[in-house]
Length: 133
Image 1: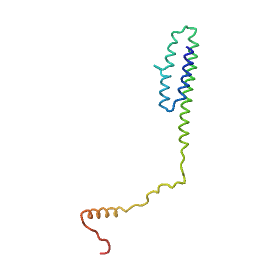
Image 2: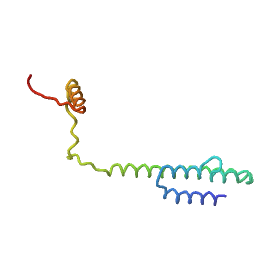
Image 3: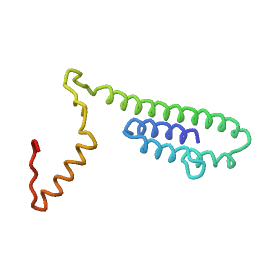
Image 4: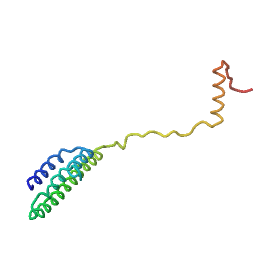
């Protein structure tokens, strides 16, 4: 039984080092630590088959293994977080590059309306004259 716990830890260490994304890490966590169907739960379900003398020792080792597994998941999550942070910090911006000039000012509402009316009549074949009376 303790061999299974050690093998489980080694397998997790190998798989956790190859995880590249948060969803992959969560899937791995579910595979190992799920209450029903998790690998650790399957091993711990065999406690009832052990003699009374060995149950306490196995339970202690299983709990230690669970703590080490959770610590490994925490390290993998920290590694992923650090990788994301590092990629964000790697971006560089040229602060001397000219920005986009904001639009300043606009036509007065009456001028805009007058232009719309003039365009309306131009589309219908009329012409407009500007100047004095």
